[in-house]
Image 1 (cartoon, rainbow, N blue to C red):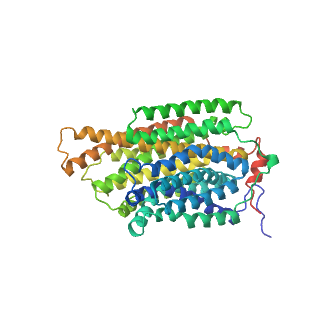
Image 2 (cartoon, rainbow, N blue to C red):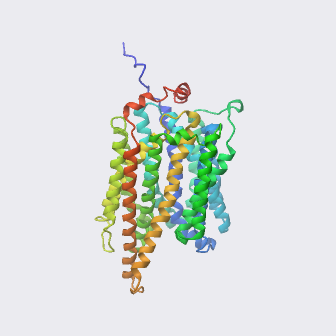
Image 3 (tube, rainbow, N blue to C red):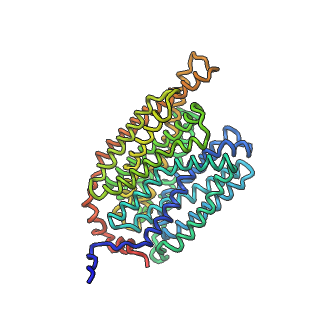
Amino acid sequence: MSAQPAASETVPDPRRWRALAVIAVAQLMIVLDITIVNIALPSAQQDLGISNGDRQWVITAYTLAFGGLLLLGGRLGDLFGRKRTFMIGLIGFALASALGGFAVTGGMLFFSRALQGAFGALLAPSALGLLSTTFSDPRERATAFGIFGAIAGGGSAIGFIAGGLLTQYLDWRWCLFVNVPIALVTAIGAYLLLTRDHIGKGRRIPLDLPGVGFGCGGLLAIVYGTSEAESRGWSDWLVLFFLALGAALLVAFVAVEKRSSHPLLPLHIVRDRNRGGAALSVGLAVVGLFGLFLFLTYYLQVVKGFSPVLTGVAFLPMTAAIIFSSTGVAARLMNRVPARALIVPGLLLGAGGMAWLTQMKVSSPYAAMVLPAEILLGLGMGLVFMPSMSLATLGVAPRETGAAAATINSAQQVGGSIGTALLNTIAASATTAYLVGKDVSSKLVRDTAAVHGYSIAAVVALGVFLAAAVVAFTMVNHRPQDEAAVGEGAGADELRAAVSPPS
């Protein structure tokens, strides 16, 4: 007679893992879209006659809508059901991508990118929330979040390759069209595989409209201010105005949320030291990581003469390192060691990669300079993203999972916006200062100045990674045995029902 599984054991459900594939593909599409359009931008600008002053809106329109609406998107999933918002996000993203692919003017492309960002803000927190409520068993959760973390950290590099291939061999429009079949097939998979979690009108709490205004408005102002800082400089009055406005709106947002009976973001979510520490750590890590993508792309293409496709291939080792670190190391150790024993070493490895890049020269070979730095950063980011994503929603009742997911997504988005603008500004300023009194007609002098700027930016990114390591060491104190306590307090029945195998 065969032994029956113990009551505490979780019987593996293949449908859960098929659902993971659906969620992972949606997340990959979002991450890819952030970088794939960057490669297509020069061709789109020429084709549509977009001015140099306006071309930034191809990127900024997306980041504004995405970053500004994440809190709202996460909460809508809590109020109306994450399966529903996930599918609406996918279909809307497909339609917006098709509109952008058919764009005949710059304004039409800008509008489509804003729509992509809005539907992405609905899709991203729904994906993370669905992942959290689908996997409750610690071992399965570690594996699922390992895969999710690998995609979150490494998908951008794949976007460079896809963008280069599509732009070089087809047309820039295919960088947008490619989303359409992916999103529609994923929506069909979501309909068939994800558990229905629709919330009826009688059980639905009202939407916190004042919170939406202050919270989304504050994030919108900060993302816009940092995006403008890249071209205007951090001392420009417009940049300072929007950064100050964003900070003021977020202060008002906290005051409103304290008094609200149905807050957009329940403040106990961010007051938890593990969730808050994870969000801050990821936000700071992304500051350095997105800055790295920016100046390494220019270094490889402008200084070293790599093609767009070859530049994308050059980022593959980082992607491979993230996947290995996230799924092969972090996922295996998450249930054995404290979370900060993964996050802090990961951030220190990232700092080591940045320290390596501070020695960058014009003549530095890829294999001896860029490759080791990418591997260090990739190994580090895998150790950071996986446990941080898991901690962001761990122990949160399903009715608040979307808000918790939106918090760490917002940290990533704001961190990426600040990192791109900050490190690009620092690199540009250092480059300009280096060129004073030198022969700017010489390509070698210009390249040397540019690389000098990149190395200075790497020094700043190194400091950011070290600061993130201090934050993680100070705030994150989650231990594997804490997993057993999840769901034992308020909302336990709701949590257990949400993570039960779908029928």
